[in-house]
Every structure is written in structure tokens, then in C-alpha cells.
Image 1 (cartoon, one colour):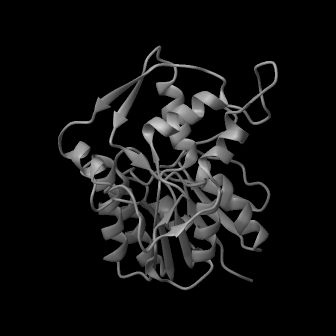
Image 2: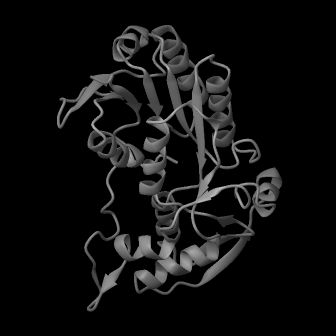
Image 3: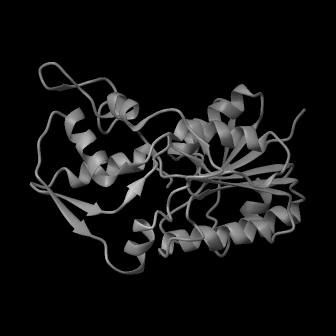
Length: 277
């Protein structure tokens, strides 16, 4: 009998794709969740907050018998602290493989979120555990959320010079499961989407899919962050792996319209859970 794989962030968008893949691979799955849930479909849920001071006991119980940890949980801040807490407990429990999902540009983009992800990467690499880290581009789901918010305005503000390589969360999930079931590999090639788009292109694609028209207003992102994005520090153009599902294909499923102006199946708002990145 194989040992269970402990997954954090199993209730988010990425986790929702990862869990069934692990189950189809015949693996037992234990999910760390901030809130108690009933176990179902071969998935056991353990309540534990990685940022809580009194979480060590629950974390120790969650790691009992676990040889592989797949760390998907993330948020706008605190990822480095949560990851340090988790790797410390994982090392004490004798975990043999720690897999972490990070973001492309973690070491180049001067935003708090990216710095937190880089701190988490370092916590994993310096833990003494055998490890694998995958940096991925922003998910289609996150880009959809951003452009949908922008498109609610009568004039759509479009940050100039910003380009993105959105990737499908299902392709990231498949790669992570492949890595988790394999041997520790350190920092593996980035995973990005199949095409680079400007923010204007992404917004126009969404508006077309929804059958809407909006004037657009270019805006300049100031400071170090703006310079980093204009220098494409958030992109991975060489030595990366690339998904195959395009932004246009994602939009057709999640933001499309049918004759008569009605939403197609799986329209906007149909994707449950968090975007993760």
C-alpha cells in the first residue's frame, strides 16, 4: 500500500484539478484545509491553518505516514511564513519529496506577492528535504477575473507594456501530479501558456467573447514594478515548457455567448474555487 500524499490548497482552483488526477493514479490523498470537512471520494481532510501559532499538533498529525507533500496553498501574503512552517514539520516527519508551485518571475518582479513566493522557494530549497519546485504563469482563471473586472467600467483601463502568458490550470495540475509521482528534481523548467498577449489583447478577446464593446484607455504602470513588467520579467521565453490550451479556447468555454446573447454552458462565473495565482 502506498503512503498518502498530503496536498495543501486542495480546495482551490488548482487543487480541484490535482485531486482527481491523484485519485485516478491510485494514490490516497490527504488535504490540509483551514476548515474542517468530511472525507469523501477517497480524500481525507485535515483541519489546520499553516499560519496559526498552535497549528503544530494538527500539522504533525496530518503528516503522519506521508512521504510526499504537494504544496499548492497560496495567498496575497504570508506564503513564505506558511511554507517555512510546513517544511519544518515535513522534515521532522521524514517526508521524502516536497513539491511546490511558484510563479514565473518570483526572483525578478518587485511585488510583495512575488517576494513572498521567492521566500517560500528558498524555504523549500534550504529545508534539507528532497524537493521539486515548478514556476508557472498566471492561470487563465486569474486573467479572466482581472479582465472581467476591468470590463465592468465604461472605459476599460489597459496597463500599457504589460504582457502575459496565461496557462491553463488543468495543464499545470497535470504537470504537478507528474512531478509529485516522480523523483525530486529541484527547480524544473517553467510552465507557461502557448502565447504571449498584451493586456489590451486579453481584454479585447474577453469583450468579443461576451459580445460587448468598450472604449479602452492606455495607462502607464509607474515605478520599479512598471519597469519590470515592461522588461518582460514576468515572462519565460526561453528554456520553458509550454501548455497547449489557448486563451481563446478558455474564453470559448468560460466567457462565450450563443445566438440571442445568452451565455454558453460554462459561462462567466462558472469556475468555482480560487484562482491560486
